[in-house]
Length: 468
Image (cartoon, rainbow, N blue to C red; front, side, top):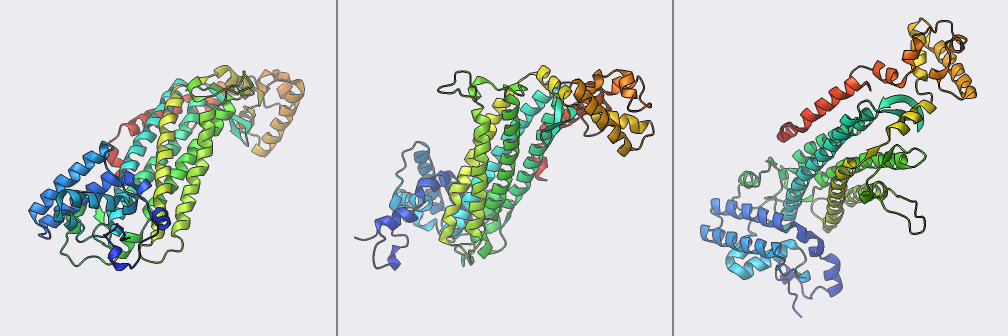
């Protein structure tokens, strides 16, 4: 039986086996590139026409045919065929069936190698723009919640042990900063995504008098890839995006871990809305934080995709190899996982209920103002190391007595240092501790408010400014 793929089968004396067809085909997953493939083909055809490589009549026939195919795809009426291997051949075969020889001329001056590289870059460029907007929506949810809790005291932790009191708003804004860096990384990554490989053809370029810069202009690419071998074989841009995505998911996983801990009744700092939780099949009292737990788990999935892409590329000689077909599924799943996670996270943060009393009680249990007492003594002229030792002894005494440092009587505190006076009690309050850290980046509510205003300004800035 003659192989149905006339695009390249003329070289072979026997057909490809059905197993090999299934094993090598990518159309089941790369068909999601269809609209980008058509977008790239339209620009390529226009450039060919402008350069006199194909006639204007052929160009208009190609335009009409591709528009019909696009409508068929959007209406789920397009006949995807496994034997045609991939999205590119499926569209080309359908185009030829619709418009005849004009459809066969579309592939002049290009290869599937530079074609697929272009499609992936178009797809990823769009995905990056969408993901940046989703990150900003989550940042807005963080800002809204932080602004409600400028004065809410919680224990700041190191080693998951109570360290110093902080504003809950300040704690939340730490995640805003992480996500801000994430958007900056994505915007920078986008610059390298937004380079056109089309025109590199199979690996060496083409003998036709093409105008790559015109094709780049039509597709809104910032520049063209400068080396044809690199253009068709490079997947750095996909790896770089995956690294950015892994970092974003890592940040979301860290926040998820905190939400899970804070929701535990032993902490009781927050409650998540019921729609983000599930119950137990046998324990009716349970309210399980399923969404944060899944975010934590899906982070491993995205990290795995990054390693898969790095491993995919590590031993490939120049130029294009069939291995590169394996870039799409991890890349697509990374985009989908990150997109869904960001979308659900912004909604979830909007439904967080904060138990201010529990946060305050936890800060009081952990001697969170011990450092403030040490700082007070230093300001009285005692060397810090000596002050540290004095406070450590005071904490031991308070532990034995079962009370916070601020609940000790003045004579009790003076037993550890005569430098301690009545003004110490303003220092030992949780609010006093927070307010004393009134500098850029500090936890004083005044500084948190400034950070929030700066964040709001950044969120409403010109989105193109991040690409400058």
